[in-house]
Image (cartoon, each protein chain N blue to C red):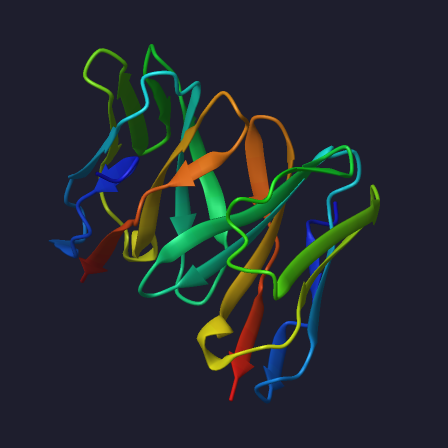
Length: 111
Length: 109
């Protein structure tokens, strides 16, 4: 079975550029989560969707971050404009509750 | 106070040792409990769910004490391959998972 798929796996960009991270959840899972992980702050939930509808975006750091889920098999997390402090690993996870399964992550470096 | 608290370690143990990790959570309405394992530069992976009656999966035993809001993970006969960070995870009634900071285990030959 294919797990959660994320792309790109690595992204290096310059400050001010737009970054788009992509996620394909496990087929049949109705919940999707975006997380950010840093050494300092650990694993933080940014936003999650149930049946493609955003339920809780209280973890989104600021207006520079936005997420969409246009259908059950695809989601994006966009950062515009990016800043060096956005450098982190971004994980997407999907769930057929209660357990969640994570994708391999996107390692973002903003210079 | 953090919602889920763990001793970050590191725990350095020899092969074959038994090691126990503890975790406390603050929200008494929490509904589901898990242990995840995360290897360096990899994604968290579900190790096991934790049930009120306690549960075992091979060398791994998980316990939950709802009254004390306490979760534990016991690893018997540690292997080198058990070296990783172990994340205590709690799911509230909103569906969100709350992760602890993780406990690092290093098993040495």
